[in-house]
Amino acid sequence: MTHPFDRRKKTPAWKTQEQRLAKKLKGRVTPGSGSTPVLKFKGDVVNELYVVEAKSTKDKSYSLKLEDLRKVVRYAFQQNKLPAFQIQFEDGKAGNILDIKEWVLIPLKHFEELQK
Image (tube, rainbow, N blue to C red):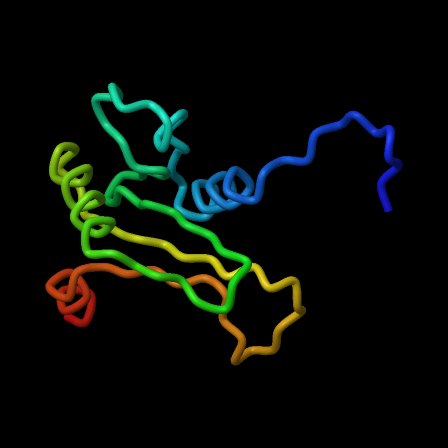
């Protein structure tokens, strides 16, 4: 339990998520990707192959909009990379092997290429 006068700021969940994802993908976090409209290149995490838009929720569902997918496709196209959309569910429960909390969406044509 934290003390009520503890002034240390807790790292926001989205920031921790982006940092962990960048480490897993051997990529980098794009500073200010969600708040700076003038960035030349955007996307929360970028590596050699992908531009990833990362989202997290404490809810049991996530409402994905077509515009969100179009946005990451635009960012990826600008950087000559593949688009990916990552969703993390943070329900605070320790899960079993069937309780997968992190998902990645990629275009079907790229998924088909992975099958070859």
